[in-house]
Amino acid sequence: MMSHHGGLPLLSTGGNFQLAIAALTIGIAAAVANAQSSGMSIYPSKGQTQEQLAKDKYECNQWAVGQSGFNPGMPAPTTSMTAPQQSRGQMARGAARGAALGAVGGAVAGDAGTGAAAGAAMGGAAGGIRRHQAKRQERQQQANVQAAASSSQEAYNRALATCLQGRGYTVN
Image 1 (cartoon, rainbow, N blue to C red):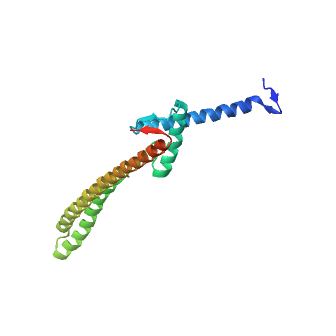
Image 2 (image 1 turned 30 degrees about the horizontal axis):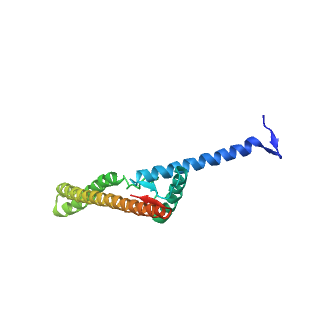
Image 3 (image 1 turned 30 degrees about the vertical axis):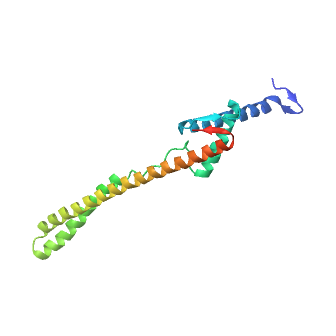
């Protein structure tokens, strides 16, 4: 069922054209979804058609991503989830170090067992303090990531609005 016109199969060229149209449609839909998720209201003020609006939103989305370095279609970065495992290890290592030092100190004083127990308790407490500090640092790091994402989203929204306004749209 493949007919040839000028040496090229018609299904091949028609298929490529349809694929290109499908890719463009998906890209436009993604840009429209990004603009809608940003909470912006965009109104044509120079008689633009819906097709032109969709094309302009897509192109302005691409430009805004380039300007801001933020892509609302990508997942936000997250912090490492290894801190709880590391903090438990810190506490155990602290107890082990404290026990070793306590045993040496206790041996000098004549009771290595008591010194080891006291050293383990102090080492474990020190490890617990380090764990608490690590958790606090992780919370601060997460807050910093969220603040940066919010700032990047704002920069993206400003760039998108600027582009669309430059193309004759009213953006609220």
